[in-house]
Length: 213
Image (tube, helix red, strand yellow):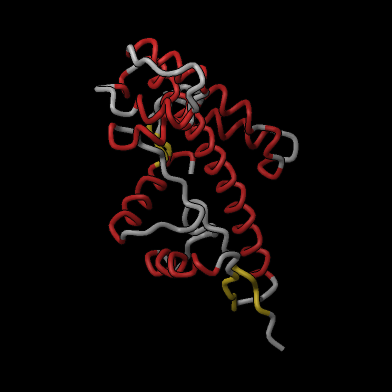
């Protein structure tokens, strides 16, 4: 899975693997490597999780997403009101001063936003750009967290599958934490019947061994 990250510096994959394997408790103890790997190899850097991007493309093509699949927010002039809602009143008043928008001192937040959202190129102001960067940085952190959890969950899934097979268990059933995601799980397993769970990023399904009597 580490090989699936595009944009890491040379030798980073081997370093990350050593950190994970060398931490106390190995991959099971995520607290032993989560922060250090983020700080050194992912934070404030350009990277891409190829599997996530491929599933995003698939879900876009079918026109719907699983319930907890994260999607990076995109802001432009058509969505500027959503972005302005995320700003503090003090930031909005600063934008008013920059844009020469005159309002009553008692103007409420919604009134300020209504006045600002029609200002040409307001999305290019320094305050708005800074907020967009903060939102994207937060999303990067959340996506990294999902990536690391997926590694841990799949490692556990692989461990449990091997243990079950050694016990002679050959039959399994899929347990769905969220029924609304069942169709996406079935789609993933159709593409790859041997996929480890989670079968796609954010999937919460599990493969449960069936002991026949």
